[in-house]
Length: 125
Picture 1 (cartoon, one colour):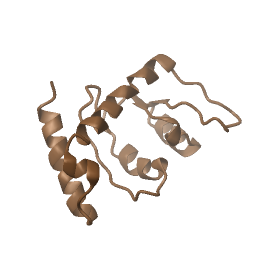
Picture 2 (cartoon, one colour):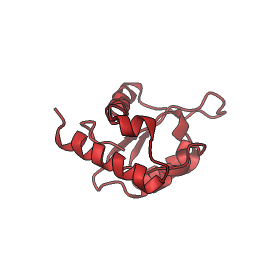
Picture 3 (spheres, rainbow, N blue to C red):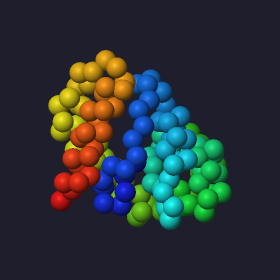
């Protein structure tokens, strides 16, 4: 998860074969106060995520999956800001240790991600 400036603020590591919205529960439960909107890609399109955000008066800007029968609306102009999270991941992958995952243990790999994210957060242009 990143803030409005593209700086990493929350990180959660899941297994490689796990769907994105399984780890979203952990991140969305820990949203900072004052969050008004959450932008996600089609992988986060689920009724459970939309309802949990609506209960907290947070706007969900998530495009519906192609096979969804009832397609909820989303703000396409707001969705364009999703490039911030993509840029954050690109900056994390500039760190060779993170991009190639040399570490076998999840806690060691997550430590490397935290170090890289700290640099990205504090050295943001």
